[in-house]
Image (cartoon, rainbow, N blue to C red; front, top):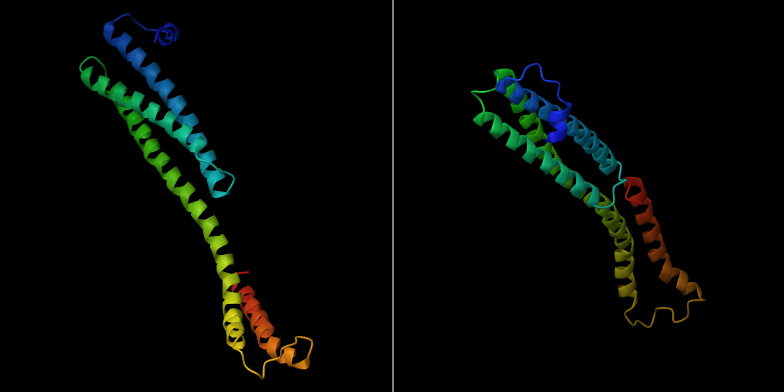
Length: 188
């Protein structure tokens, strides 16, 4: 607080002007801090949506800084309400504006978690889609193989015979057709 007061060039030494000068300087400092936090928010948002953010540490750190700014802004706002008869309406409006902007920032910061989790879920969905595609290819093949697994005397006992081609051809053809189909719909 001493550093803030030391830097202020007061026009007069009236108590009202001293209080307004200090409050103006605090609003200015909070505004600069809020601007930097908005920039970090936008940078984090871009990193999340581009898939470059892989852990929550940066989001948590930013959220803590935003909460500190919000607490400072709300404290200043309530102090200005108590001092309303000593400060001008312009100073009160500036403090209220700073408080509302900090409130907007804290609301938007909670959205970062949702955006991050949505991006992680999207990556997981792509992986699950690929695994489903693989099981989609092998499930019918497994069904046909299990039908052929029944012990019939007509099934080939040796895979080096012509009968092995009859045995394996439906499996291979079905696998190829399913692979082509999945590539066509964009799953592979």
